[in-house]
Amino acid sequence: MRKNSPEIQDKAMRNEFLIGTVRGNHEGPTVIFVGGIHGNEPSGVQALELVMKELEGEAESLRGTVFALRGNPAALALQERFIDEDLNRLWTIPRVNAIKSGELKPASSEENQQQQLCRLIDEILENESGPFYFFDLHTTSCQTIPFLTVNDMHMNRVYAEQYPVPMILGIEEYLEGPVLSYINELGYVAFGFEAGQHDDPHSVQNQLAFIRLTLSFTGALDRSDLSFQHYYESLKKAASGVNEVYEIFFRYEIDKDELFEMQPGFVNFESVKKDSSLASSNGEILKASRDSSLFMPLYQKQGNDGYFLIRKIPRFILRISDWLRRIRMDHIFPLLPGIRWEDEGKNALVVNKRVARFFAREIFHLFGYRNKVIDQDHIRMKNRETVARKEEYKSAPWFDKL
Ligand SMILES: [Zn+2]
Image 1 (cartoon, rainbow, N blue to C red):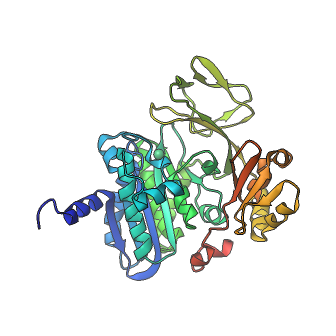
Image 2: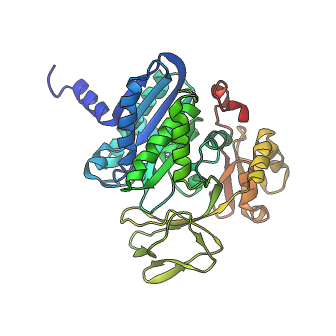
Image 3: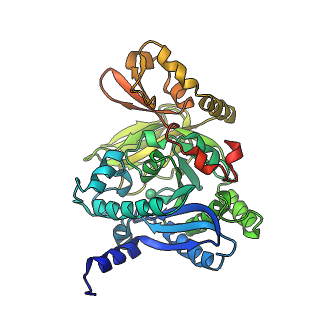
């Protein structure tokens, strides 16, 4: 075979993205990890390389199959967040479909990477049996305890509550096109883990602990495994015992030519008082709109999320929300004036803005809806629950908590 034959090129491309695959000797879940979708966040890849080696010796006790992928090999090689554009903002359904159909020809480095990665993910989803789990490993530019970023789908939330670290809900309302949202739209459990600061050596340790715990929580490995307790305690300690659930209510987006600078010294989850100064934009001071916690303050050049503000959600509210979603209480909404189903599928509501003013956004969140403004007068509220493939997780160890 000639050296540059398509088959060999394809294989080389595949190897760039595939860190490894380990098949267990028993039936079980398909667990997919992605590290380094941002090229300046290598800790996930490093941890995956270590775990995959270890797992090769554990096939005997492993159930199902584990895949470890590199998200953006080209940017990882340069140790840059991205080369042309953020790979973790390109995964809207229309865009992915256009890439798959060939309608959209990759023009940037990241579009190229997306095409390859998408092909690999599709191949896994087509050829393997479920239930599927998908985890995206990251780090942040600020100092932080480890935490989870979770799209607020009931099933995601229940699964994610097993980890001894804080959980941030609702990031999908503020970010367009993260890869996790794409996988969620397909109906699978998928969320992100932020292990710590980019260059902090503890980040690799936290990624390791997260990966190991994940293998137990998904049922791929036994919990009686001695190492389970070790990793559980180590992650709990890294999170300083914080395991609250938070909701994002504000994102500061940096404009293209804006000169943005965070005030120095903030750590993630730091409490801020109303009106305290957080950052400057073109020389003007930006202040907190209310007492809250600061989330993901930006201390690097690349990226346009300046910072977020978050607040705690009490557990009893979460349980009420679980219940409302289970009994599909949202079906009463279209009985109210100014609210109607978008179409027969009853997956989305179209809400007149004047009505929406009376119903705080929080109310719709309780019922599992996320919102997007569609025109001057209307908001489209999409239900995150209708796509969930709950049935496929029936034999999962956490399913009884649903
Ligand atoms: Zn990242």
